Image (cartoon, rainbow, N blue to C red; front, side, top):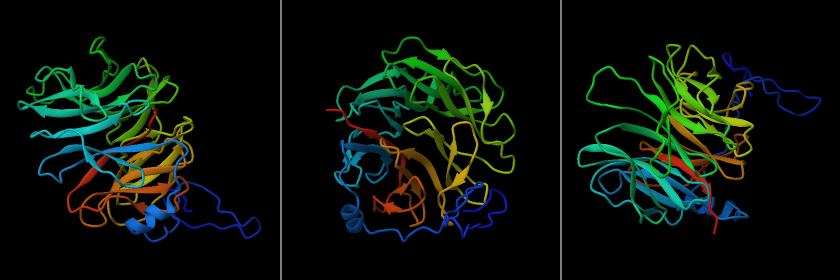
Length: 319
């Protein structure tokens, strides 16, 4: 594994272990084919599902699939663009952003596409990056009130899933986005450009104690995602001249790079068991969804389509 910034490989012959000083530069095993991936992935103890967006039907739609890439299903089927999907706890509902009647709104629906409800009305707000709280009662998202007004910046908001109680959490002249609730509901990780570049921050669920976790002035960091036990945060960063997937402790220490490929990689999402991470990569020319073990091994491609598959989220499905 390589130290953040100089990426030197250090080995210990006595213990036979790799010491982690920052960025993990282990060379990954060759990406498996779809058939190999299906055979290699063991059935989970509980069923899990992945949600993502794809333009394979000519416009952006929300899809769901099994964790091995099978049973890919369009669950929105709408003529306008649908974006930024996120599972509810238990996988019964999906929150997403949609442009309907030429205006953007925050929506929730059942996982099968029924029961569509608009939480943030179109035209009154420009929402983005929704993420469900662990108790299923609230959704945190980024947005601003009037997207026709120039020079606005994103802020972080919370709303109840019945559409009431809209509350603003951040007040900053820079842009705050990509919020993600911690599993215990006490913290929210998010991105901010308040230091001149995009960094991963964390704050209390009420918006207090906003703290920079990544502190990497030379790069831009991307969407954070908490591990299921709340001890780690995955994110992407271009600190080595290209976007790679990183993992760090929840306090910002031990920032480790899991991937090593010239193609761009973004939007990491933990598996419900905490042993794997899904992400999008452009190594085949278009964006496809991959899964990797949390230690950087066993990379597997699970979509294979000539269109772009992006914005992944992963959930354990409760029956």
